[in-house]
Image 1 (tube, helix red, strand yellow):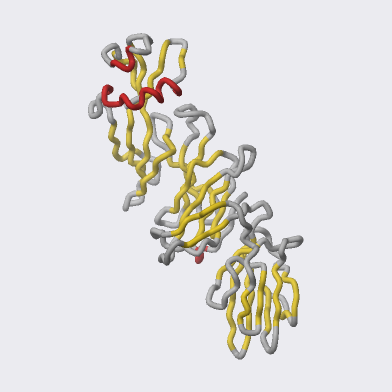
Image 2: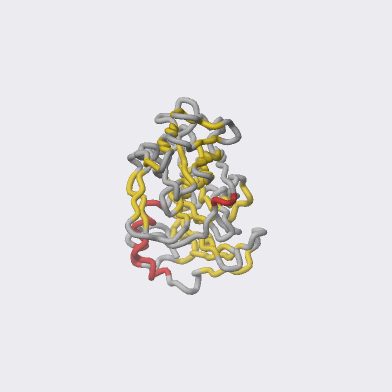
Length: 315
C-alpha cells in the first residue's frame, strides 16, 4: 500500500511525552462536538473549529460515515461541490490516502478543515497524551498477527495518523529523518546475517523508495540507524573474519567444538547519501574475545553448525 501525503503535513521531529497504549479502539468513534452552527461526526480527533486536520474511515460503506448537521445560517461545502444544507452524509469521493477539504462558512467567516481518508484495513488504535508536548512526529511499527501484513504509521503529537505504509516484508522499526523522509528497516525473518537484502529503506512523503541504506562488505544489522548532522547515516554490521584460535577461551572449551572457529566482529560504518563508506570502526583489536562471555549462551542457541565445523558469533 503506497501512502499519500501533502508536504504541508510534515512537522519537525521532536521529543514527545506521549505513548501509544494499545491497538484496541477504532479512531472513528470520537463523539461529535457542537461547534456553533455546525456539527460534524465521524472524524478523528473530535471536530473542533480550532483544529484543521483530521482522518476518517471515509468513503462508501464507511462505518460510521462522516455526517454534518448544519443549523442556522452556516453552510458546509465539501471539496468543489455545492453547499450542504441541513443534515447530510458526506461522501468525499476520493481514494484512501487522499485529502479532501470541508469548508464551513458562518457569519462572514470561512474556515477550511482537511480530512485524510484511511484505508479500509487501517488498524485500530488508541492514543493517550501523558502531558503537553510540542509539535512533532513519532513512528510506530508493528504486525498485529503472524499472518498479517506489518504497518508503519507516523503519528503527530495529537495521535493523528499523518503517514502510513504496509510493506510486503517484515519491519523491524522505522523513524522520521531530518529532511522529512522516512527510514523503514526491512527484514526477511531469516535470522542474523543471512539475507543481503537486509537494509533501511528511505522513502519519500509520497511513499516512493528513494534508496536503500546498507553496510558494505557484510550484511546490515537492521537494529541500529543513527542520522548525523550532515545527513550521513551510521549503520552497524557484524563482519566475518577467518577462523581464529579459540582453545584458550574457557566458555568455548566447555562445548568441545574444534579448536578454531569463524568469528564475526562488530563494525560501525558511516554511509553517505550515495551509499559510500566514508568512515568505519571495527571491534577487532579493541574488544577481547574473553570479554564477550555473556554472549556465549546466544552463540550456543543461535549459531548454526556448518559442515566445516562451528561458526561463532561474537565481538
